[in-house]
Length: 144
Image (cartoon, rainbow, N blue to C red; front, top):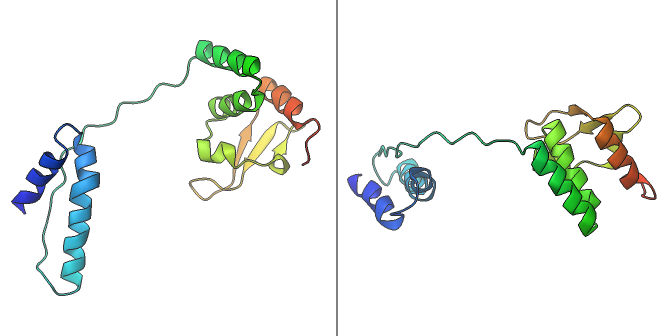
């Protein structure tokens, strides 16, 4: 279908090819396959636009983390600082960090167990002394 690619360029003239693929090519392809499955049309092959490889993201620098933690302390939100440090030091995803529960954290053994991960496997993360100290302060006075 030669018109589909031109349609994508018309609808999204300044966006990347990845957006054109995701928002136009993939839905149209799904409709065409559905029509074929129902016997309403022939098999149609629609090629994706060529996508550039995504640029590798850099981790936050130690200076940035230090400044962020200081601002969190100043603003009275130490739990956010712990969350960011936890992700930085353990490589946890945001979804893994926010679903972590106190029952899965062993401050004495310096480990945290991720029960629900993206890969559907349990994952043990090792905690640094700095992180254990901050988690200990947060855990004081909280229910398990």
